[in-house]
Image (cartoon, rainbow over all chains, first blue to last red; front, side):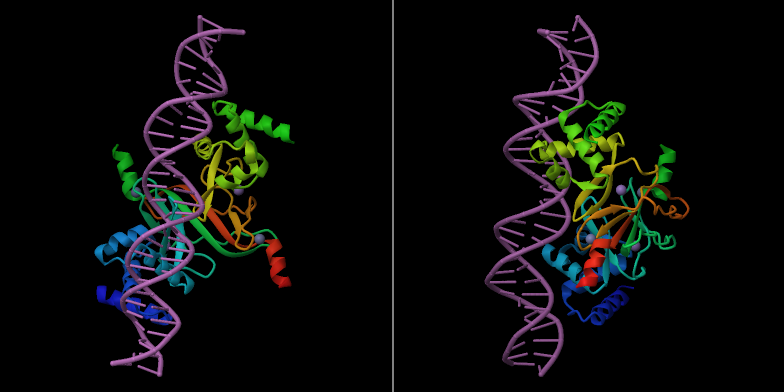
Length: 145
Length: 145
DNA sequence: TATATTATTGCAACTTAGTTGCATTTGGAT
DNA sequence: ATCCAAATGCAACTAAGTTGCAATAATATA
Ligand SMILES: [Mn+2]
Ligand SMILES: [Mn+2]
Ligand SMILES: [Zn+2]
Ligand SMILES: [Zn+2]
């Protein structure tokens, strides 16, 4: 699946008319393989020695945002999470669930909510839904304690 | 209304068994009068010379969180917003709208969404809905431009 | 009202996430 | 192979939030 990932990464970069650099391929492949929102630090950790400079990662993610390859999924502990922008409509992405015990984040792609109806005069461009609670693993743990 | 505000602030502190200090009264009154989410910096600015130390404000807000007088409404530009926890149910608050042009935040208290249905095994404790777009003022501006 | 007890505060120093400026390197068009 | 704008790395910086600790103030009790 890895070379498939690389192929997909190249395709995305090409489609967005972004230069195919080592850093961009690395970051994009990481996001493709993750399939869920990652922070800058998580991306860095996954790339290990292969990771570009911290600033470069930020700039690469910014590039991806500009061309809608990724989007900022949500914020926890003051760090943005980024994920592939492939499973969302123009106005909203699926809800994201974060387990308050193990800190893992899950994409609830089947639980998209209707748009909130806004008062007259407001134009809503984007709706974001965040959930917090316990994941199956941590619920299990609770029961055992 | 100001002395009414102070009265309400005292009542809330008393009910939560928190000592009635100058700093707490000041911060709480500010939040009561604002009626919308404020960042640490916005609270500081409103209090001006009367503002307690930066660290003290953070600690006061933490105290308020612990006893559910306030809640963290959302994050924008890496800064938490706090507001009175008086217009929300246990599991979710109303949606919050932030204008991407003028940066103001509005409470959509009449636009509460149903809870997202989560996959088997997950326990959802809290749902948060964020909206982004243009407020009436800035829509107006767009039209004029 | 004075005293004691404990919570609260201010200050300085620190951490973490993200940004800026600038000189060097590199992708890809020719 | 050459060229040049785009991309990168590095150092220094900012903004938000945290920690430790000594000084101070709110309340309970005498
Ligand atoms: Mn997702
Ligand atoms: Mn609100
Ligand atoms: Zn968990
Ligand atoms: Zn506006």
